[in-house]
Length: 117
Image 1 (cartoon, rainbow, N blue to C red):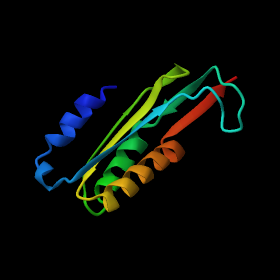
Image 2: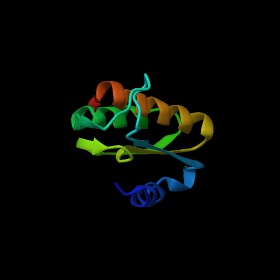
Image 3: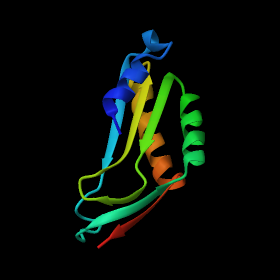
């Protein structure tokens, strides 16, 4: 995962002059589960076809110009990057909701995660 490369790609989009904002999400493995139990790591699997569909859907949202997603499958340790999502678009009111919706959909529809305690 290379967020600098992803940002350069978004900035290099043919419609980048219409872009007023780029927002990103970097998901990391936490040391505790949502209920507070200590976590040693996680095993995560991503469905690339589902993610491609989510990206295409997000790109159809108002004001969105580019959406990039990079993921890391397999056994991950605390502190490891799980997923990076970058969304470029015209204004905050379009970009932030698109970023949030993309991340939520990938977590729900495009991934499986098992925490290891």
